[in-house]
Image (cartoon, rainbow, N blue to C red; front, side):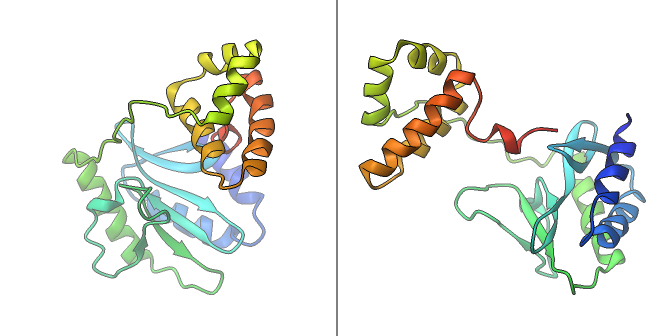
Length: 198
């Protein structure tokens, strides 16, 4: 199945957002971007670099500009969905009653393409060490299978689990999170893997 066919299926499964997704797709298809599917969503690339993607949510539809931080955004349409966490990504959200201005969207997409051609890219900063919370440390010390499975995870996945468990304020919540995480760790999967599948 081609990426184009996958996008057709994704859009045709929609009830609430079908028309808006079709319109957005037709706008982006006017450009030189290649249509692909990543994380189960329509994604548009230039020379293998992510430029823009579409995502559907319960209360809104979003155009994601992967290096949106470099866009001029004179019309003030873009938001940072996770202030302090997301560095380069910017979203343009559409609610059910919002009008879509094809000319304006095309301007944003074309600017994003020019930025990609110019090599404008904010590289993710790699975090070096994984800080393991006490509760997880003691679980790793007492459960051999857990320790072995945890050591096989990528540093990023290890960090996800460590932060997820460690950021809980109450010890009871930390314990609950540890119990949930232990099963996933033993399966060799990341905490957020279910959201990353194609």
